Length: 322
Image 1 (spheres, helix red, strand yellow):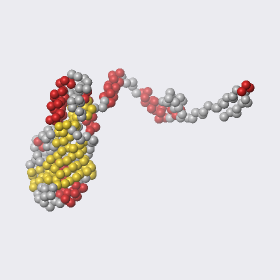
Image 2: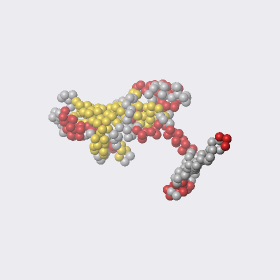
Image 3: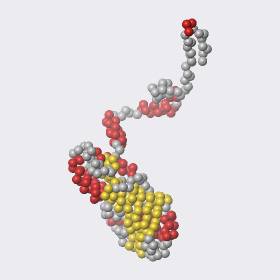
Image 4: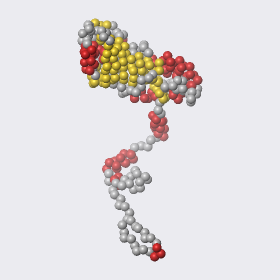
């Protein structure tokens, strides 16, 4: 700081003068105005290279810019999970919505998607994960613009429950196939069940059933099996996060609950449990309890009649029922 001058006549206060702050290399010229440029840019080879690449890139055409804005706007739209009926049956919801369905027996996930699509009269609908026709439980249906999110559901963990029958192996590893071998199961104790369950928990290798939906050359394995040309699939990794097993005294039906990652096969799990116990086994029944954080779902006998009843009126109303 400079020395203060002598007091001025008339009682005026002296003015204190400070030197301007030193500007260090790398500091911004004017904060908030020239934040894109620093002193470092003058001698930073990486910054110079970035500037050169940006100068070489062609300018985006008006059409490309418009399409990019549309894609960004679509990505920003958050779909509605349909939890209220008929309030969530308007065009805005069915054009960008997610419906949780409790799939009944003998329906495929594709059957469910087609039935929902027709009922709500939307242009696009797809399911976010197949489920065997002989199983029941949660299927996620994406409607309209939400179909872009189908791949997002694939990595989510699954939860299943069901019954495994000891003492018999089948051609399909479940109750729909012919029994190919019967073995005694009376020697199996609760301790044996517990040990086998622990051995099948964690990161394991499974061989999918020849009747599974695992793709081979673009077609599901069951397509070849139905044509009398079953294909043997190679083992693949699966993650079983938790597995609980129980049964009634003297019964060969074992109840189970399983939490697992994508791609884990419950048919293969039943077959491998029977092999570990030395008595053979197959999947008697199966229900998908949840996918990720989703568990509660609409039954089709409730949803479809309401959707068909209200869809015609909502189709002509862009705002839906309000």
